[in-house]
Length: 299
Image (cartoon, rainbow, N blue to C red; front, side):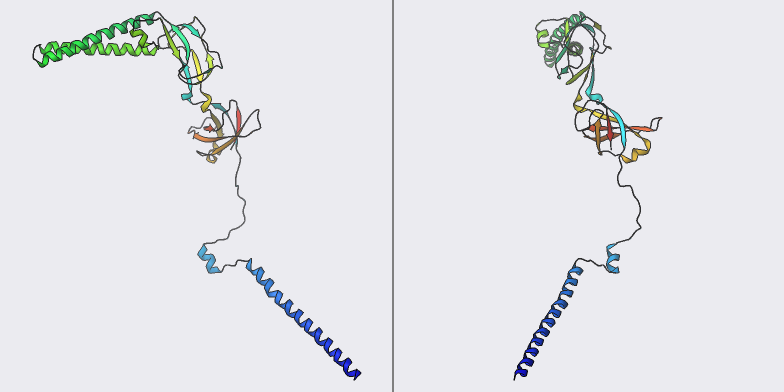
């Protein structure tokens, strides 16, 4: 009986061990396909038909230039519309001015007073022409009313009309001259005649040149002041002919001042069409930030 029990114990232990080994083998075999399946999920394979349909082609490895930096030099400038040379149309003596080089002025600001005895005669001529015009206008209207009733001759009407047109032209011509020296018309028509004319700033900006002094006589061709509006600065750059193809309208430009390390931005606005003798071309960029100095530009 004891031998039988021992044999039974041995058989039970062997059976349990066999079951454990079998289960372990099945679990290991089950893990392998699952792991292989996860690896296949991360892989995309295309057939020859799919590659042809998608238009996929293969090429050789080669070197290509993706981007480049071009360093150019230039100067800051302003458009011609933002730079004004101030002169007077009829000349005269400079009676007063408060401008100094670097002064800030606003559009319409009084910047000088010019004195000339000829201004007196001009105003007298205007007042006379204005009076004669008003008389001829009234006479012309009267002659037209008489002509409707066949009271006057046609010749009288024509003569009246001619006088009216002559004095109209004279009045308007003298009025234009008076306006050029900025005479106060309201005061003039009340009989106030002056020997001076005012000079007003045509733009807002900074005075860069003062070429006159108090008491100096200036002619119409003389430049009294130069005023620059720095609100619309642009950069005029010089680039070599071989690099022209690398720039285009609207392209962004990064630049720095000679005495700064901070980058500033601008946009290419115009590209010159003329090649200079040194094989360079000028192009203009509009500045996004306002600066006043020389600089270097990197594209």
